[in-house]
Image (tube, rainbow, N blue to C red; front, side):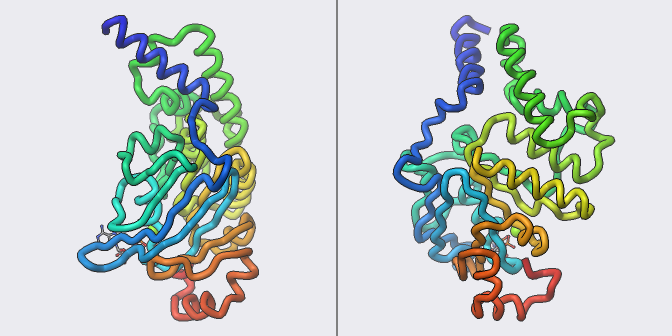
Amino acid sequence: MSLIDSLKDRDRVFDFMAPQASPVDVRHGPILYMEDVTVSFDGFKAINKLNLTIDDGELRCIIGPNGAGKTTMMDIITGKTRPTEGSVWFGSRHNLLTMNEPDIASLGIGRKFQKPTVFEALSVFHNLELAMAADKRILPTLTARMTGEIRDRIEEVLETIGLTVLHHQPAGILSHGQKQWLEIGMLLMQRPRLLLVDEPVAGMTEQEMERTAELLTGLAGQQSVVVVEHDMGFVRSIARQVTVLHQGSVLAEGSMDQVSSDPKVVEVYLGADDEEAA
Ligand SMILES: Nc1ncnc2c1ncn2[C@@H]1O[C@H](COP(=O)(O)OP(=O)(O)O)[C@@H](O)[C@H]1O
Ligand SMILES: [Mg+2]
């Protein structure tokens, strides 16, 4: 590796160490701003003039029947799917529609898919370490001070996700719920500004769901968290502001009590089977 390359790598490590440097400008508005966003798949509008704003540090729950466009909405924010129309901004400075997936991720948008994808043979600690230095070329160039800072960050995240006592265990022995927390921890290693979480409690025990509610509500404030979830009991336990999607648009928005007593929402959910409705 040339000297220039290793200096570049070192600078990238310093980027990690100085997350405040991420120039997301939220002084005059929301952290995420979507206006009149439409996505057509062969003429079918999966997202139809969607308007959504998320404030810095807020916890937002998104509910809506199957096919409402919830996953497509996350695909748009992360750059996986391009809308046919509309605008999507991260803070007032970053037009996400001009950026690719890796660049959007490195701005500080982390996405947790439904299925956990941890490295089962590696320890919990090592999974978190790898999540920080996703580019393995960085590790050999770390100085002792930086290694110490990474260790501190790992310990902090282990505490947050409640896996401190299991840190040396292989991730493969963790319960389903603990794997989900580990994966959230892996996202947290990169200090995201916005965390998108798709159905975090599917398959969890009652106790794991309670712990996940604490985890997500605790994360809000430090970062913005958008949770798509089918389990209405869970949503009720964490909800502040709730957005109901239907046919690719916002049907209702407000507190859980406001949206669940909204006649438009009741009508959509009455038509749906309980399992499907979320
Ligand atoms: N790549 C695709 N091609 C065609 N149709 C799609 C594609 N992705 C999603 N859809 C359709 O868009 C609608 C919204 O899907 P989705 O965002 O997955 O809904 P949700 O996550 O709310 O259940 C559905 O009708 C789905 O079939
Ligand atoms: Mg979905």
